[in-house]
Image 1 (cartoon, rainbow, N blue to C red):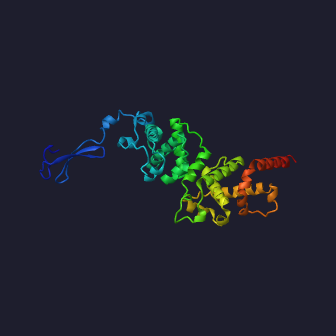
Image 2: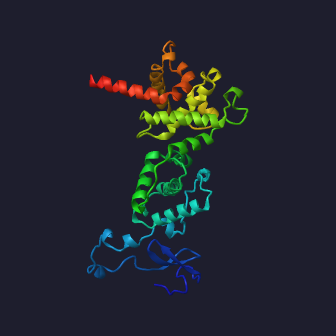
Image 3: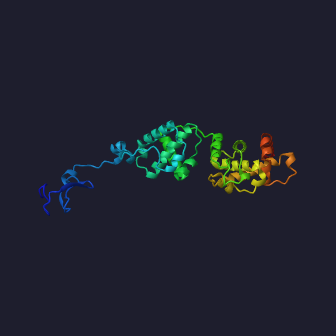
Amino acid sequence: MAARGRCPECGSESLVEDAHYAQQQLVCAACGCVVSEGLLTTTYTDEENLREVAYSQSTGQKEQLSRCLQRGKSRSCPPRPSLAAAPVSNAVFEETAVSYFQRALQLPAFHLVSLEKKELLGGCCVFVTCRQHNWPLTMGTVCSLLYAKQDLFASVYLSLQRELGLSVPALSLADLVTTHLNSFRLFQPSANVPAPFLEDKDKLLARTLAIVELASETWLVTGRHPVPIVTAAAFLAWQSLQPGPRLCCPLARFCRLAGVDLPPPAHLRLKELLEILLGMASKLSWLRGFHLDKKTVVKHIGDLLQHRVFLLKNAFSQQDGEEQQ
């Protein structure tokens, strides 16, 4: 083996150390000749006295940090710019979300997860923080900001909740309705919204809340995603306030005008709400003379909501009588 100070091939003294995988080498910078190289492993004699140790039994599993922390990239939120649209402007919210994210990265359950799940983990921390501070942020909203699949987001969220032992309060439906309607673009004059389609925000909110309460009383809300129900209720409320020019507007166009996404189940929730309204209309004496369908019943939503307690009680008592017979 040549002396450390000179290359045996070209005679250059420009020698540098180069780590090739786990093997240290001394390489000539002029010609690339490998002057000397260390041992990749122990000698054969030494290996006879060694024994295998499973990784799960070693201390490495407990001591290993996640790759983000090893590289000094402890991020409080996913790098998606769209998550900035989430309501985390409050400093307390931000500190709490960062704290949850940093705690989660210390746990073995999140050490070897993919980068995609790491991004979703940040979104889950934001989601939990907002819900704990009674901010009606939905899982669907965060998924749309992160362009994430809801089932994958839900799995990461459940893992975070289980590993950190977090308590997340239930979502208030009234707050969700208010937040969802605040994003509508139907309250200010715009070139994209015809004048007959503009509506007063307070009137639309009050009517939508009443329809959502009706849906809750008839078990349409239980066990279902709330946003499609709120979207369908807002559409019916909007139509019922000025039926004349709005009955011909379909749900898809309404969502485009309002500037909100159309959840796929919203059409089903709309159909179920209309069936309930038709059933209630058949119990009102002054509406029995009219031939009502799913379009014309919208004109009488105000009357139906005003008498909904009596109509629902009558419908339930009649159903109980039929079951007893």
